Length: 447
Ligand code: HDL
Ligand code: ZN
Image (cartoon, rainbow, N blue to C red; front, side, top):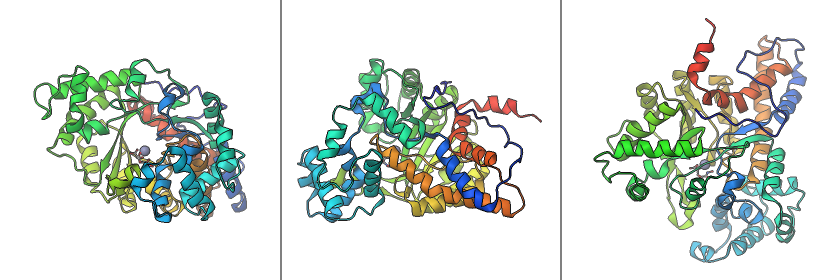
């Protein structure tokens, strides 16, 4: 069972899954809002899903102004504001792309969208001028910044103590770095990402053969035990805190398909064997517009009976679930009330906008109390955690304050300690407790 490397660089937050402290010092209705905002600022959050990389994987990590400005969320937007065609855009250099996006979305137009305003907020937080007519000043700022020190600075600005990466054992750029022994880092945790195996087996099975695993295209022979060996080898190499996969809106389980068999006969057993949660992010309509590449994915409503069947048929497994369709959120909350092995997390991707985050978080609190993980950043570029977590705190502080005000109105005194306990639970200990062996917690329950 991987130890959650928690020797974080921020002051150690002593927390446990204990019950809220006694109700001394109850707050007035007017004091609740400020107390919530202050505790949201004070508690260092854990970012449970990102595309960031620890320093020893530095060459695959993205950071700096040109990456911030060419984030695929902004690439989707440039084609709405500029006459440039995708083919013309992809023919540009990274700098030329960034200059075009900056001029079009930030100079010639007001950056009103969540993603463009995020760049503005990030630049302002770093002391850069978000009204600049060019990226010259910003480029100079990033040039020559030592990455390791920059990462610590950015995490402090974001108010996160650690981040979970997305690590693909079949990524030709990343895998060799692990095989050469990438040094771990206390502020980063690995997540073993399995999309190429579960979703694109027919394109990637030969990569396992090339690495000495006796697998076959149609899962014949000893394929499933060899896939289990492959996953076990990468668990030893990466020491992941969970395994993960994104899934289409058409995902079904059980299913007599390559994915259905690999999931049931390889991935789920290995999760049980290593006592690891499985993170499933469901509802992607992949490449609805391939011309715009990473920006070309869409969203679709999934049939969450697949989640129901997973929880019923595999009660020993633990599931971290995020869904991409707003229409699936309410039923995900209902399922979380049915299965304690299901931990909903985040307002993912197209849902990570205040108008949706407010609605989703309110219904989660109403149905689940503090037993969920409100947000992850999904950051692809290091500095994005600054705006994504700033926005999360700004959006959720009023939502949490409202929940505590209702509690006080209904007769239960609310204290700062109780607020702190709830925030720590939602942004830290729900996740940490999910990683610790559940059986340990079960034995700890006093009857
Ligand atoms: O599959 C995923 O982890 C998604 O988050 C995709 O990476 C997506 O492109 C994304 O970055 N969403 O925010
Ligand atoms: Zn992601």
